[in-house]
Image 1 (tube, rainbow, N blue to C red):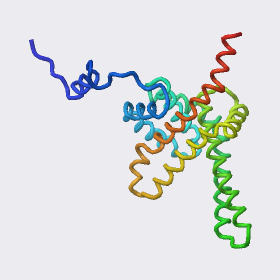
Image 2 (tube, rainbow, N blue to C red; image 1 turned 60 degrees about the vertical axis):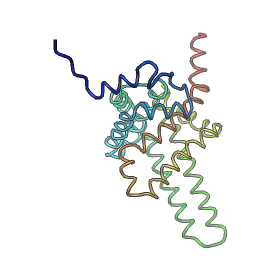
Image 3 (cartoon, rainbow, N blue to C red; image 1 turned 30 degrees about the vertical axis):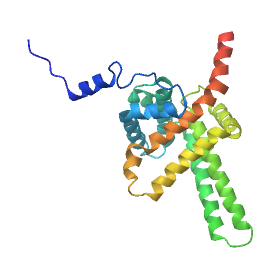
Image 4 (cartoon, rainbow, N blue to C red; image 1 turned 90 degrees about the vertical axis):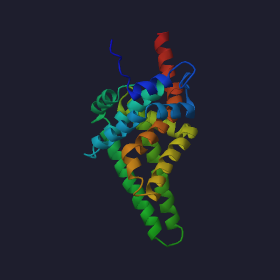
Length: 240
């Protein structure tokens, strides 16, 4: 009887999951350990997701829907440990291509206004005015970064209309200061790193930067989302 050949990948998998070797402990349930577990376990999916996001963002107006699709996959990976990337991404992309567009337009307007005020503050030299316009530009930038990240976290996870989504996002922005810090740090570090090391960071931008940044944001927002919205909703539903 001919001996069946074993590929190198089969050998690596057998070693990794063999009793007493490789992956033997259950995955972390939450926190940074859970984030690193997802990154280490699903490298190929993170890369594929980053490429999908960039490809579906090419028409520009589809960026909000592509971000919803990306967050849907990342939330599934973080909560459940696995998912079908294309199936989840495409389903969420189609569901939000028009629903998420108003938020994308709002973000574009606010980012332009923030850029305008910051540029005005740099160019002015009269006493006090430049400080006011610069502060206004920074506050507007912080607001829209936090608000939109909550919006695009809630759209793929909550079956609510846009008004309710916006209301919950605004409440979280005002109350979840720990999550706010993580969101701002994640976006700020990614942007700063990309700019300072450009053009070397182009490779990371294409293959990993956006998906890794959004994984951290989804992980940070998952706990308060479960505690303050999903948990109470499920309790009320079971009590009815």
